[in-house]
Image 1 (cartoon, rainbow, N blue to C red):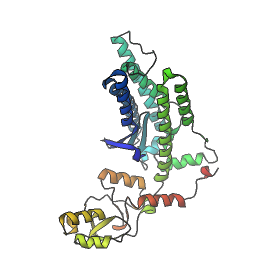
Image 2: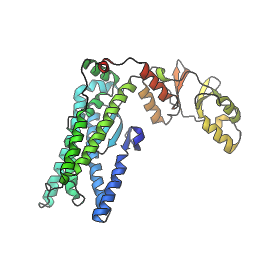
Image 3: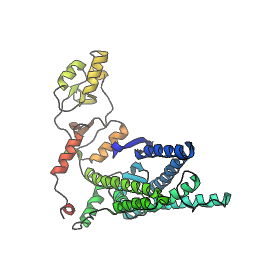
Image 4: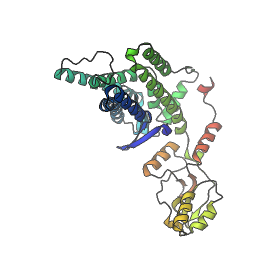
Length: 374
């Protein structure tokens, strides 16, 4: 998911990323605008109308989540809506239960419908001759009408029985996910998600009736959204159940802060990991990457390691959930090296190089859930 997204910042402690289809859609809108209107303004305005509809939906959902005690940690935005990630071990998430997730689910489309109604009322109040129900509903030559229908269509699509949104909202806690899994033991999952069928129907409808060509584009977004949400629900449940002790690296090389860069590089050259803990006596004081040692040695010459190491550390415990440890490290800006501490001593480390392979091995060694065996 992160490979196909762009970070746009953190707002009120929530990391926000956008899918790469957003800038691609802007390029498409500007290209069509130049071709049909000989300018960029209308294409950019139409793209902003879509962004505004997504913003209305996600602000409403985030507000509903906060009201129900759900701690939102990240939002992944697509042109048809957003995928939310909540704190996996949050007690408030468990206490909110189904009622809280239902409010979050329904608040998005309700907000879009209300905003569409506001646009309609104010537009007709200022100009009663505005044709909101003429075809095509979404068009470069009618930005106001397009803004109105973008709100309504996004709200309608959010109500379609594609299921992934509700599943994601409940996957924020591993306990809740396990409880849901126990209730569904023995049930077979449908071979094809309803979201895929809806997306296919929309694309076929748009091709069959060119006057509503825009519904094919909407169908493509529904298909993309269904794929992303299904993948997020699966990987989210898997990662929430993994503890730090299951993936930490227990065999590693220690470097001393009093070592020279050349001596440290000699000690690190045969290690299987690329980032090393730096100690002063029995105390952990920082970390440094092999690449950093080599670059500083090449540029500045030989010097002491303590002048080149990073002192930014985010500690974790072996019994903490991996998702929470990574989230705290991301906030602290120290995801390259996470020391694992137990009884005031370091018993392991987590590095970007060792983590993917360790997670994959944990998944392979775990027994298959009963619902996947049916």
